[in-house]
Length: 183
Image (cartoon, rainbow, N blue to C red; front, side, top):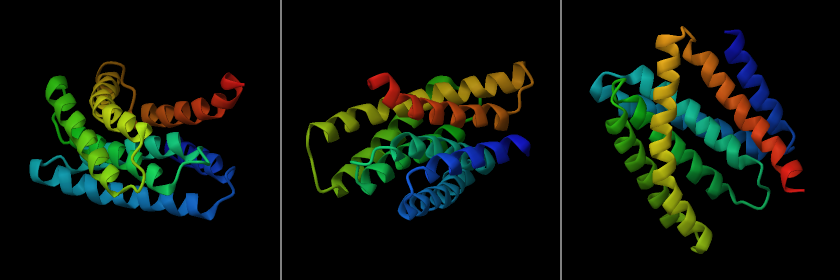
């Protein structure tokens, strides 16, 4: 419980620096949607808990990754959150130790999410093409990340909520370091 509270507090503290109520509202919408989508994707295969868990964790990480760009429209944050949400849910719906199957579904779900979102975006430029190319790659890599976390849980007795908390912390620290690295 402590790790979960720590991760949530860290995410809220990170979002607070933007001083924008719309960022908090967007985060709440993303998380609520991830719970619903994860449940719907996991339910038919009997993996509701895993699909929901990974949909929320990966969607949150994706949202935090793009929330810091003030020039990006809200649709950009929602698009990458949808990629994370659907890739996380699809990967969570696949049983452990099936990395290729998990990667296939993660890549397909991530690519499909970005394709649908890009059709809804008003601007189609080189950056949107780049996002379309990267989304299935990211979705496939989500599968590898989830498999690694599950392996740590099995072999090192490290509960997934601790590892997922560290994942969210790494995303936040990475975002905070970007301005210093690029300066």
